[in-house]
Image 1 (cartoon, rainbow, N blue to C red):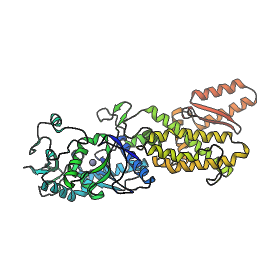
Image 2: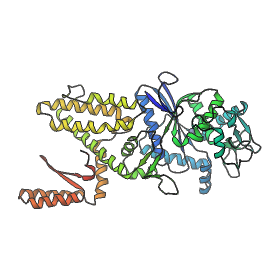
Image 3: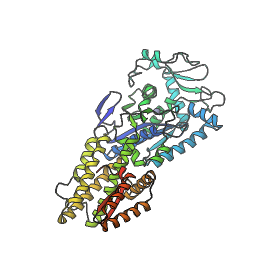
Image 4: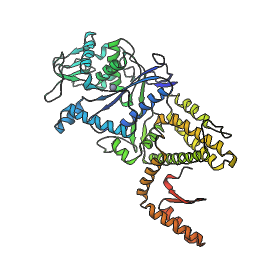
Length: 490
Ligand SMILES: [Zn+2]
């Protein structure tokens, strides 16, 4: 199995520190507002990676943190007149609800900075004792960047170049503008904990080094997070953990790409920040995952309305096919143990999935297989000869079984087909501004017209409906209807 390592900037063979086990840490959300779709992508990506590693037989421990003490949280809480921890707890509950509604499988351990304060203090003291940190006169504690030889190795930044970029108005008590805070002394009205250096709270970076250590050990296999965390957050985590333990912190560094919305970076000032909550009002949770997984996790992704519309029509095609497959399997007694139809593709589904996913979790390639699979399923349902129908049903059962075994790792096809189909129909009915009753009345009128050979009238009704986005198909069981927008796949 191969995984891209941001440290070496290469795809590498994945060999965990301990055979069969994977220790993975991913930086989670700083909870000062509702989580947005970028947070969702990161959670979806690392959940997918941990689930796939499990599927490949690894014993995985996946830790994800919540930053619940931080400048932004304190600022927001003060504006709202709330206690900072009470506020961040409320925000965590909101995020948990969003992640649940997205049906994202949780990390094995979810940590909060505020619950590790004593351990964070120990870690900082260790860094002071080892000569990597100092206590400033005001009670802040700073990390001495120049004392850590490997500083800049992840982000490929040279210390001297860095000096050009940092603010020269050095914070009070800081000896070198490069140094970063491990502990911040409490200002008036700020939340604090007691420490050997006075009242204060941890800096951001130290919490991840500490929580990774206590939950996973001195060294971990995979450290993940959004690309925007490479510098300074992950660079600083490396400096802290490697100075403290004298060992390589993480064997592989993994970063997922950033999310833009309709061509623009999400930002508060542009008012285009898409919260998970708003995204879920607009789109089905599997459609969101489908769009996310349609791009490789390391790439930035631009979420365009048309991509969601395309994903909806594709997922609709897949789910309507699954529904037909289930009916067919039931009708002809399909069984996964039974003999397959000639040319059956069911045995290729899992090996193909594994082949592309073993190549740095290439979900985009895995998703691009789906259309061919469902097209094949539709074809055999349409064309199997009478005497082959049991074999066809067996093959369909095997296809569904294989899809369930692997595509659920991507969070897809976890619903009953009718649930997805009906939700999508309800959504598109709203869009088309027509009711089911109106459609059915028109279809009945058209059937009458056809019976009395008034083909002009029949065609006029068909055209009228088509203009409204409804297409009709005449089948042996009568006329069925569907949404044009959802039916552009097959
Ligand atoms: Zn972190």
